[in-house]
Amino acid sequence: RSVRDIAQVAFHMKMNEPTRINVTYDSGLQELERKLRESVKPTTQFVLLLTPHKDSTKVYRMFKQATCRDYPCITQVVKSETIRKRQSIAAVLSRIVLQINAKFCGPLWQVDLRCEETDPAFRRPTMVIGIDIFVSRECEQYMGFAASLDPACTEYYSIAYPLDAGLENESVPIKLQEATRDALLHFAQRNKDMLPEHVIVYRGSVNPQDWARLEATEIEALKHILSVARSAAQEDTNMALTFVAVTKRSNMRFFQPTASASSGKTSVKNPDVGTVVDCDLLRHPDAPSFYLMNQAINKGSAVPTQFVVLCDTAQMSANSLQQLTYRLSFLYFNCTCSVRVPAPLQYAKKIAHFVGTALKFVPHKRLLRTMFYL
Image 1 (spheres, rainbow, N blue to C red):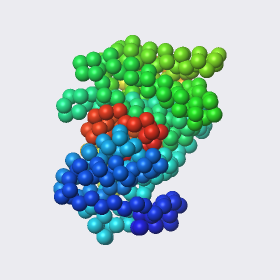
Image 2: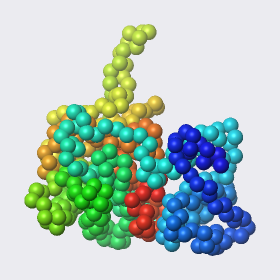
Image 3: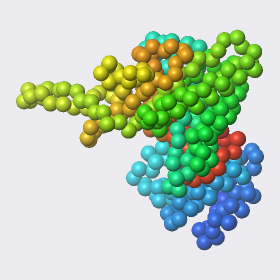
Image 4: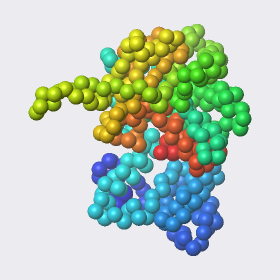
């Protein structure tokens, strides 16, 4: 009842009276699976599970596997001990309500992506894609994919695939074409049969030695599927492609001089959030690149994120891409501040990690237009 009250009063979200189901811990996971089979219907929109502290990981994994494959619906898992914290219960319930809203693709906030600073980005139909690879403890690899469907980059088509063992590099272009094809179909459904004219891709987990391979495989695969989609839609103009490799692990460090107000001595500090470093001394000779400080760091030195443009048939200006990249880092709804990479890439990383740790299989197609993995 408290969750429903906070959702209605604070966030204007309407929640109907839920169906309550009790499963005792002693009855085991089989009883929970049986209750789900009996209670979850095709019309069920949401299931909230309160888990015990003991064996919560096993319960979580079984519950997520069941509701992402056999009984697909959006779910939220909350540990019982979390809601027993009476001193902070209002804040806890507010965070739960916000996460539920985000999972249903309800935007928690928005950032202006179509403005003078990012021009000409988003002046025409644009899709932003994030791609990342997750490696599990068992050394299994999963490709995460998230593609924006609306001009505000708050609605996504997201999916993750397990990659063939020993053939991961060969599997990625195939899975990437499949995911991009489906994302384009969902984009057209969302935007009155209109396809994007510009596709911006942020590819994570990339090292400099991977650039040549990406250009020969993934970029060529994307160009091919975009060309096929444009031909199938009987459109004359080509879809422009901007492909950006993203490296979070960098040995580069930047510091900003600052003068002490009391002593007058000059010292150094971390650069301000949003600082872009783009100069000839640091730029890669074969591709446009820049460093961006996306997050505020209170302790230690800030680690910049490097962005390298491997393909740009849209001929975006450096300033437009840098401004857009920074603004996109504020649109990850699991964090109220900016993150180190653009939101589509962070969502791709999140779903790859979720599938690689909890599911081990491709989620049900009913969930792919939601953010069920947050």
